[in-house]
Length: 266
Ligand code: ADP
Image (cartoon, rainbow, N blue to C red; front, top):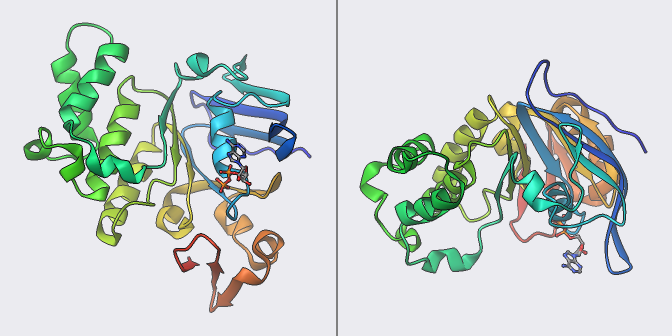
């Protein structure tokens, strides 16, 4: 299957997946996935539970080596090489509940990352810049991460991924541990970051990022559809992967998936 989409002209970064097959042992999760993404812009990867969304992200990042096929970043073969991809990419994994118990502060987390990844001697200034950029107020920089709200905590981990100012940002379920008020602000931040970076996000709430989204990649063990949201988020396409879990009310498809968060709508 060959799927291709371009996000914008003249931009800095491309990610190509060439006919990849990914499995855990002999359990095949993704089969024959071909994609071409160009940044900057926001890509939402959607699909039901177990569709392979996290597996796709981790394959792009080189953490998983596909059984077949190649991953290219800016034309360079980085298949299964996380240190190569890491030059271009920042990764924000899904927040574990244990993040609520982090005793270290936002400042300390970013400082530790900066010691590894920041160039030059102006680390203090760089840490201030990054924490400000993700919208964290100065008065909470030295508070333990475990005492921040879900939205603030997610911003800290976005800040960590931005330390080396990568052109690619990969985020797994960034809204999963965030309250409704925090979600709106976080969506704005992710939308803003996608003005200058290729941002690839998995989500169970596509509506939250809809107005910033250039491309939706709908997967279910392979690529089902790729394109702008108005082309992909249509009843007949969603039915292919969500089946009876899609209900259209007015113009809005609603998804009832098995993820345990109730109704999804946009
Ligand atoms: P999604 O993010 O769409 O929910 P995942 O990529 O997490 O899906 O998982 C896809 C499938 O692969 C699921 O059936 C899951 O149980 C399985 N899987 C994920 N990680 C592993 C692993 N480390 N070992 C074995 N199976 C896994």
